[in-house]
Image (tube, rainbow, N blue to C red; front, side, top):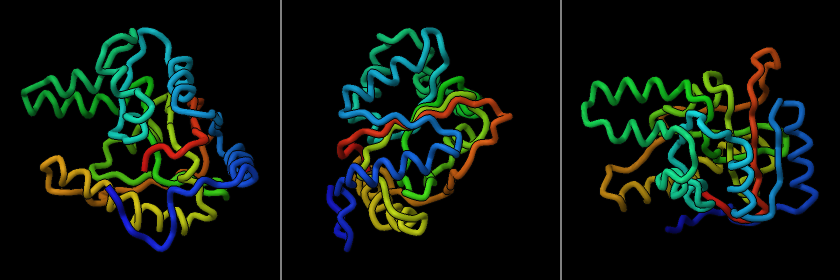
Length: 211
């Protein structure tokens, strides 16, 4: 899938830009870990989530590319797969209840669409189902993102979402026989209040990962 834009959103930032971004994110309450590749990214997630934990995931190309989705489906992990239980439920009323309860998952794993060198994360969603967990309800959040998602400013991040991430997601959805995609809700994450005592982790992969 390809999208033509005036900006190459797959270009990797310089080491200096990556370090500037990490430094800008430090006061926000997010623990940023820079890894070399997708294998290391998956290893970091495995180290962060204990056996027996309730785990929920957002739809994410990044999680597919690092092998996390396949691992979750394999049941070879020792976690409670909330998304698997929700999707296996055939009764729509009961499934809706499980979907709402998943917002309280002990560990919520997903990705983001843009990271700014000024210290903001930009998350766009069709349904908004992951936003409560990212913003407040899950005590542990893990984001995985390739460093190509780093942009200079918040304005650039919003532009990346609309010019690049959304068209690719729309194309992917249509290729799967769905009606397409649009932005229903958006979260701009700037800062986490310390008294919430949540554990937020951003695993930055020094490669092109996700869209």
